Image (cartoon, rainbow, N blue to C red):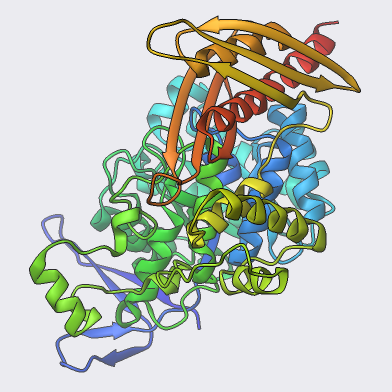
Length: 550
């Protein structure tokens, strides 16, 4: 069912414009207001493009594939896999994801140039449903200072480049960059030119997070009303969170007639980030009275898994109060709240943890549990592993059972996600063994032995503590290129002194971030493994950079 918007303009400069909705209406139970039933909203995920552009959030190919698989399980409608022309690595990742993902469309971003469009097509052409996503700025500020183009030149470029993309594919999205600061009449002309040239999706982004919900709703409604043939295309919103209104603005865009929301897992993205997928999806799911039943095709039980996977890859954790996926999202400390929840959960919970894939029963498995019970638990939590992955995770689980009295769901999730994103490259250094000696009266020393291509390398170093000493020994063996050490963080997986330590390390070089993660009950070993993982990525980048320079 298509929701049509019409604009009724009254005569006289002093009279305001009135937006009316031409849809299907009903009365709610309290007869307070009339509401319209919505058609399905598509979810366009740009975690692998806009999200990865965020400082400290870069991913390698293996990690991008893992995120793409999470997005496919989530049932997003479109995966923007990257900006193909930006680098050979980006091209490879877009192409690989296009060839791997089968249950949703795969898009590549492209500037409005023939070279970008040709490259984007080469990257996505093997996808089950390829999309080329063009963008060109339309605000006076961007046209004058960034593009150095006149409005007429922008119009001509829009028509010509959309037509060029049309030679390759029918699924074409055109974005009017900085739409919320553009002149309305000019914006309508640009959108009209894009549609006439073959665009099937029109995106009106709030590129700098400038607008408000009321303005966004009106912007979408007026463009739809002002452009002939707007009923032949889908309108999209892409909102940034600079003023903390990305989710609200996206939902307002839907109320204005948009049928696609562009968002990222955990709200990652440039500056303050993008619209958070988990927040905007659950907002629509929780308020069917406003947005309609089954508004998206998202499998919400996969949200927590996807969020955890992305946070693990970039070496971060969710803020405690992060909506939907934060640790405190379903916790109640106030006595009044506890009393209400015990009487009826709906008193203080508008959605259930199970709805987003969070399990709170936490039934404990132990060292006597078999592989079938372990596999059944993984299946209950939404993890479907192949035989090799299942065997590897089960072996790690059994090892953990010998070290930890109680192994709960959080431990199992940590094992699975760590195995899925284990990024010690095949041709990188592997830990053979290490030893440390430390006390509060002597300088810490460490011996580390690593293997590479059948050879073993050993170093002995001292340092300010066992971790520093071990890292110095690793540096002596790998001898990395000059880099910064940007992050070292330890998180506990579960309560108790026998918990596993989850260590994240981030290194920086050439404005790139190289992250590593280690998981172990021995926090020194977790630290060593995390550092080796990050160093392997840095080493691989340095080798590829040297080849280019030659």
